[in-house]
Image 1 (tube, rainbow, N blue to C red):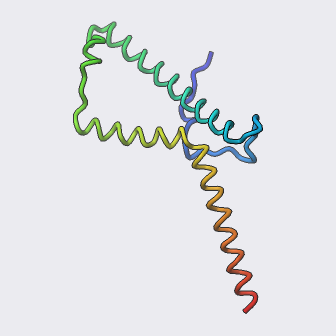
Image 2 (image 1 turned 135 degrees about the vertical axis):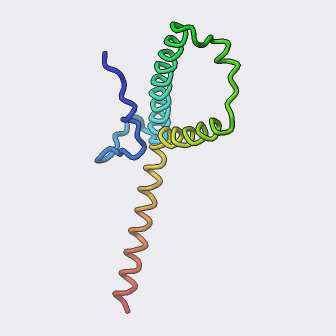
Image 3 (image 1 turned 60 degrees about the vertical axis):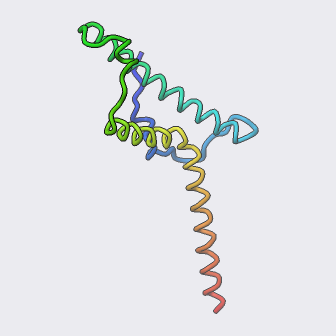
Length: 121
C-alpha cells in the first residue's frame, strides 16, 4: 500500500476541465468534497502523529501524559494559526474555486459591457 502524498492537497492545484457531479444537488457534491478533504487531512495527520508518538515512546523521551499537559508559547500559537488558515483554505478549496470562477464570469461580463458601450459611442 502506498502512502498518501499530502502535496495533492495543495490549494494552488486545480483540476482541469469541468468538475463531475454525482448527486442531483451540486451542494451535496461540494459538501462531500469538503468532507473527503477533511478525511484525507485527518488520516495523514493521524499517521504522522502515531509515528512521532511511537518514536518518542521507544526512546523514552516523552509520555502521553506529557503530550496532554503541553501548553504552547506565543510563537507556537502564531505558527499554528498560520497553519490552520492554510489548512482551512485546502479544505474549502472547492468553494474558493467556485467563487473565483464566478468572480471571473462577472469580470468578463463587465468587460463585455464596457466594449459594447465604447462601440456605441
